Figure 1 (cartoon, one colour):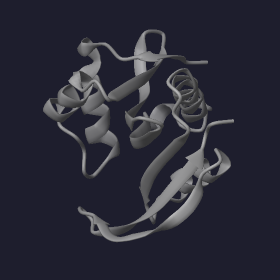
Figure 2 (cartoon, one colour):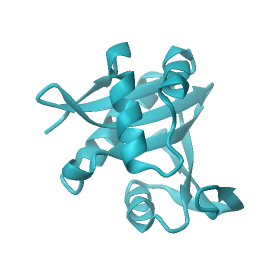
Figure 3 (cartoon, one colour):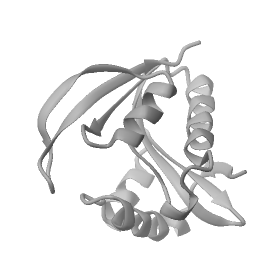
Length: 147
């Protein structure tokens, strides 16, 4: 089981390293630091034996939020880490009266789409050619988390 908590500034480079390992359009450490400093953003990390093994980057305003990234290191996938991260995010949403979460996901990312649907997200539409490297459509999804 992972411990879910806000990352520290010392973890920014680790998040950037995981980004480059996982995503073809990875965020730089500078971008992650800017998000870390943003008062309307949250970066929660999943830690196992004090090592960062996953994270979620979340932006929010008023009663809505958007998952910009959710990722788990390849060696820790299929172990429930994403579910633990998402549960930590839901706790944050309840504490901050956030009622709806939005996200977009690559149309080819079937494991992520299945995870989101299992977590209560519904498809809202398609954003054509949203992603680069490679160019790909995004599925827009949302979930009511006010319950």
